[in-house]
Image 1 (spheres, rainbow, N blue to C red):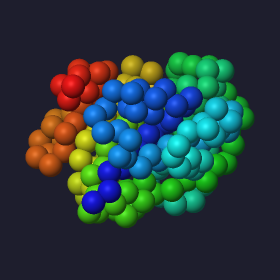
Image 2 (image 1 turned 180 degrees about the vertical axis):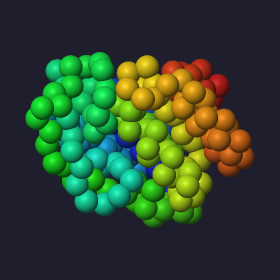
Image 3 (image 1 turned 30 degrees about the vertical axis):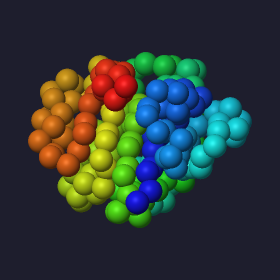
Length: 185
C-alpha cells in the first residue's frame, strides 16, 4: 500500500512544505500537486513530487480558467468576488475528471488538501454522487462560500454534514487542519 498526498490548488507549495514539516512519516508519501496557474509552475519545479498542470475537475476535456490579480485567487468559477479575477480574459485549460483519476489509488492511503477557489462545491458534489470520495482517507477543504455569488454558508454546511457522516473518511475544514495535524504529534 502506497501513501499518497494530493494538493489541489498547490499555489506556491506552502501546503506541501507544511505537510512535509509537520505530518508524521510525511517522507513516505508520494506527492501530487495540482496547479493550473502557469504563473506558479516555476516555483513548484523544485518540489519532489508530481506537478499536474491540469485543472482537477468533474470531467476530462477543457474548462475556462480565469486568472486573478492575486495568483491565489485564480478560479474556474464565475462569480468570485475576491482576488481581482479577470473574467473578461478566460483561458481554456485542460482538465481531468479528478474522481476518475483518484480511483487509481484504490488500495492506497490517500490524503487530499483542497483549496480550489470555489470549485470545491462542484468537485465534492460530483465525487459524492459518483462514489469516488470513498477513495480518500483524509480530506482537508478550504471553502469559499463568502466569496462566490450564489454559494452560501448553507452549501458548506450541507457538504460538511455529508462528509462528516462518512465513516471511512477523516475530514476537516482546511482552517482546522492545523489542530488535526497537531493531534498526530
